[in-house]
Length: 525
Image (cartoon, rainbow, N blue to C red; front, side, top):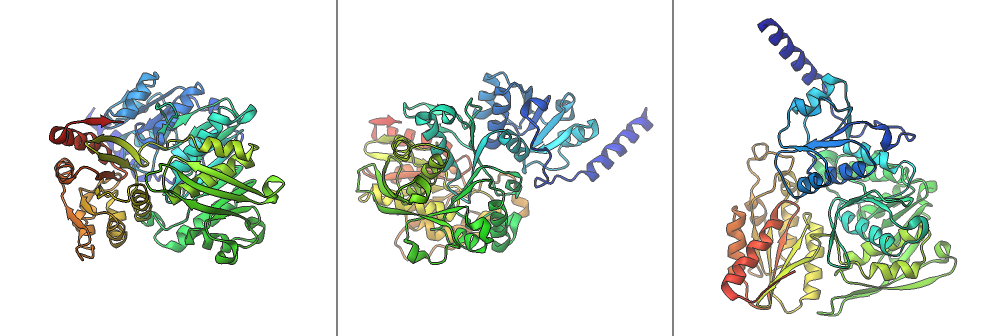
């Protein structure tokens, strides 16, 4: 008995040591369909990207289950749909699985990974499932360091609310929830009956190289995820390769210097399928390598108007005759004018009338946690936003300055990832200087460990602040304490932002509670 146990342990150790998880290697062919999968188990099923895919497979009749470390809103939703979830990760969870799905956060020594290999189950990355769901669909992917969720949500919204025929009822896989026009919250995954699939294409681990969509949107190619790519050049090369996979067209924002560099690096036959959109004129941009150009003109937002207005100048090459298309959005900021332009252009390429697409975009209230107003107490507004890259924070605070020109802006910022905090400490400090009052709280680790970055703390950002007295910034590691401090410093007319990609969103209700206790007269949205 002892000998057998020792032999089993030795065999398990050998299996464990031989496992290599490579998310860039495709596991499925283009002829495979979801119905061919069999029992499918998701490790970390409660993650934003994983839960969406699990729900979509479930909607298509695939037997799905999963595991996670602890319950949450996503796992509760999955369980309400009849998807079993275990809250331990152990070998027994995968004993009946034919396919086991992992994300880049899962390590080779995970007990479910080891057991899946020992059982002969097929290990696939979450990107393999998304690529599988694209098979047989008119797929539109959205890639970029930021803007993915809003842009993909906008396109899904346009098709859901004004698409007809095959464009109606699209499938979508979005890493966040959508605010519906009637105030409801729509989940980020849906297996529709139409022919279109809209999906975020996550570039963080290189796995977007597996996708071969009809249409690609690239919102930007600003260097990020350097823990994976190491250099800006490698990051841009991955996007250049991504362009070659589009079967029909690539819609690319060339306001971004990185995306413009990618466009100029393309072979002529690839550049010709690019539709380059920008708030700059073609003359200002210079060499576009033969791409079709679309100009965003007359962009503005009047103070306190609640609308973002602009005109898309669409050339005859795309719609048969030159069109100056007016658009009025309910989501603020120049960055959202860019996001909406990409979504509208994709809808037009799919066959939708341009004016119908623009009107539909104007009813979009935003993806959850994108300039989402959580409530108001005594004329103090609390806003939640997912911004977690310096450029996103800059765009958020510039939009806030235009929407609330006379307000003091208070920001509670939770950095996301130790590596990103280390790489962009100065850029974060510069972006946060657009606020009046900032508290940087404890770093959300996600897939990383503090022990690997012992020198990286909230003070890593604060120490890079210019300290000229134009704004207040401090580090408070305890998130709840920081939220209470910020709430007590706010005055009527001010705006408080909870900002970051981790669990900082939980502090919105805390801030509202403190404000209500202090001022009364709460209104939560």
